Length: 142
Length: 380
Image (tube, rainbow over all chains, first blue to last red; front, top):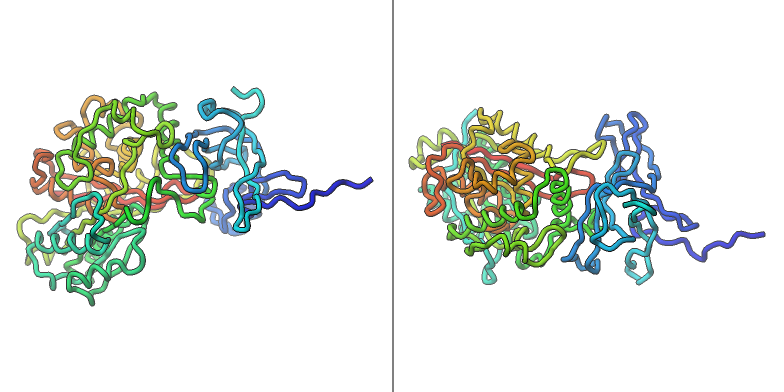
């Protein structure tokens, strides 16, 4: 029995910060200090805590807590409005900005438990669809 | 080490200048500052020019217009702190003993460079997911409302106050008073912020002539104001998430300025702070230690920050009312401090002020609390 392979690996909209696997899973990427254990997003060259320069690139957890959010009504040219934008805190001790999805813009709450979802995210210069991340409230989150 | 004094100031009207460019505006402010200082243009020994989006060698284009091409000049970019950073660099050149009379000019022709919301540099990961400057401050506002119970009406009062002050400032972008209802009914930008919570896209320039002890004795026109501190820091990368309802960067920069000036926050009589958004003024004054954490919205409601109040904030109208031509902003704040301390502020004069503080904070980069922060303390 053979496993069906996707025809193409989804293309990440920002490969340095976001990895998409062949199976369609997505992971935020950052650095972990091999000396003091601090985590950073995005990838850094040295630790801002202890200045150690030996950092490893790691995949972050895909769960988070919503720290705060806004609904953008006046957009940049790249995104259709309205869209919800938030800061989410990851278990590694890292805060990341992300678009939010899964609820009406008015229905997000500070403190909600969130999870990363892999979604289409714009197109490259040749018009090919790219893949990015958003965070949505976990099922049952108030 | 020598002290540093502001001998002359100049500033264009802030607003839309479709018939001028950044060098035209900078040149007008430059020449006014020279005249105000009561010196000859040839007495300027060096210059620093703050701007953000005006392209290469804007400062040299100003020098060419005013007949002073040939001087040592550095262009300075530090986002919305660019003009304030130019003042700091000019003051350092004087303190180092290299020069006695130095011009700091800040200019921006923003209406030809940007429409709508400012965004971080396109290379930034947060810009890539749709960050705009209003949305970042909107998120801070929402969190502050949650933590401290600030009401939307209290936040609107910051914009109402600053637009009222601007109405008394002939050089301000906006000259019309507004009501709380005007704020709450203005166009939504990024919830919970609306149009009147946001500083406008503005053209304008400002300039100051800084001089040494030696030069102030020789050239002093009796109106020199001492620049008692000019501090600059950049934001740090946090090793764990910290609150977004307080500004460690503003606090650290202020503490360094207080120490240098030999004062404490209780000695400040009035301040110009970087109110790029209504919520920003709240975060700035609390970070500066001028008001207790969580206390500013109530203080504004009680009129404590009005001209004539206990501690006037943004008597010029601030960025919300006077306007925000990025490179010009930090220099214009110092122009306002000087005019207030000289007693030349007209209808918006604060009586008896001896110590004024100016605060700028600019730029957004992923993972950094704020890109560049400056605090200037001026003492009569």
